[in-house]
Length: 215
Image 1 (tube, rainbow, N blue to C red):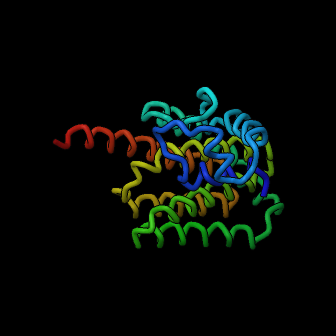
Image 2: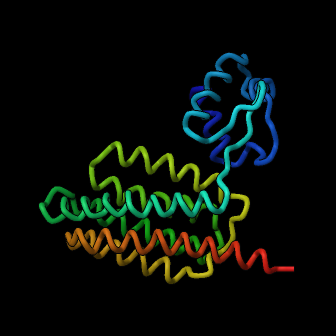
């Protein structure tokens, strides 16, 4: 594993404190390497939008609630297009049935983990489901962009991770995506993904409002 890969794993795994500056020297000592490869790796992570440089160290780059809302709205558009393209490829026979079966397994796993309270793994499974749907569009630029957005979503919501208020609704929305893509209905696939992403955005806003009301 490269220094970049090691540091990225630390960032995504929650091993770097959210609101603290971490010095290059600390990271170098932790990985048992010199500062130079650490500095280069951190520059790449900053380019990925995951950290912010601060002197000879970094802080995690987390998004505020409004930024996350904008990101989910953008996600609705891009993922919606990808789902429509995926459905078109299904209709033309370009997608193997095994890949559709894999989507169903990810949706079921997401729901099972959510209901069991294993929220960390549920987030991973949910992300895997959405990225797998987008991957069916066979557009690496879109897949790469969405992967970066999901990185930001995961990092920015880890601290406030809580049990979803609408687990069955989420599962039903995933089901609507699966049915639309699986049947090759491009318009329905786009609509299902957009509805789901915007519902996620609205749930985020509702949670923020409820948190503010809590004494």
